[in-house]
Image (cartoon, rainbow over all chains, first blue to last red; front, side, top):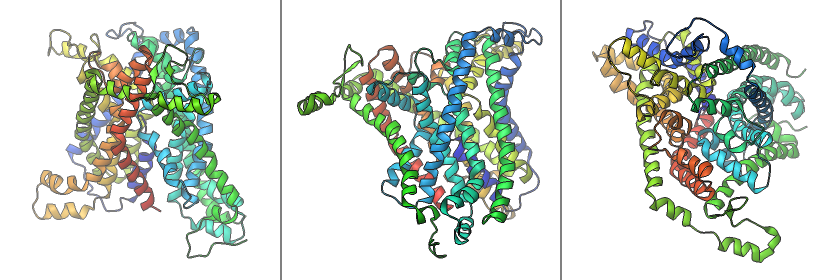
Length: 294
Length: 314
């Protein structure tokens, strides 16, 4: 699946930080070539897609000059616009629900030592990170059919919440395990109630991870095609399902335009959130260091 | 209020309010039970059922109203027929083998592609490294579907790659590239590259430079140092990356559906066809259970690794 993104993002981050040994300063030509080739491979296809969304000509082979023609045509594609609203609503709801549930799950796994049923609990949280999506989609659909719950927006929202809460839990758990627990102990020793300790010490410290988790959940929900195609029904077509049915018919410049818009939205979210979380992380750490017994 | 003693592991939330602890555990636990475990039990149950021309399209249907006799006839009606069909039909076996083959080969290709990139990143100046990590991650926030679609634009008959090859006079007719295993491999390597690069990079970063300096001092050429020192030390990262890519690739649907040819299906596509086109829900469920069983061992290993990495930092 798309994204064990989370777990490895944090892992790689710490790795970059902890590599304390002095590096050989010169970087060889081979290494530069390897990095550039890798990045070119990753970015060229996306760059081409974005470029051709501004192509004035209908054919992919011909460059017909810069144009916003395909974006204008999108404005008249009411089915696509409706799908976009459905997807946004879905992503907003499931990301928010998943963030609450995932944070609770992470707290349960890290702050409440051992409890009966911890092993199946952590297994249930980590399984969806690697499980093929067709299996999750099929399983959830069969549940909804068995209890006679209508397929559509809400079924898909529940499905996305379930999938993405696992990613949120993984990110928040990594952060909870990482930070210095003596801060919490100090607050408790100084007479803070557990709730107050959580609100004034723990929460500010894990807010960046929670924000990153929400963001990841949002984009995962926005991107998902396989699970949604199992759980959705008539009247709740999501953007990826709409794009998929267009792509099956062949390459169309309108598809390039809507894909470019989706990339832009996701890029905007990622950049804002990373800026925000940086500021939060700083103020959070300072607050925790200075003002625990406030 | 009783503060935890300094030498016992502190569990602030556990110390005071047991009921709030239960709430913290119970809410996500119940959710996962209802929307993850229960659905899987239903899949298993359905894989033992038969197709029926009804709504829902399977029988038996669990009916509590019929009382004890109903429950007994329900269990009596379950059978292993779907699994027998699975193992006797070459279509299913074929697509299983095909999936394993594609997943295996593409995992090897991924290792070959990711190793130089990860190595280069780990040797880059320290100040570049965070930016490089972000640069590798970033494409993966964009939708899977969009990235595969981008490759259709490139690989199709009137696509950019054929235009380029024609313009350079390397070929004199467009080469059919889409709808082939080659296109599937390109799509998979493209989509999964970061999940291979980042774990390898993470272990390469931890390698002590003095080991490499010692090898160089003793007159070992660079490529040999790489092979004798770096590569063995990078094993844990390779293994992690390989497992994390292999498992979802086996069940991949979008990539073979959009880039592959329709003659040889991967198991995800077969499941899809059984479910949506043939409306044979019991066989689709049996396929899901079989796929899950095949992937169980790698999944358990991944969970172990996850728990260990988090445990080690505790």
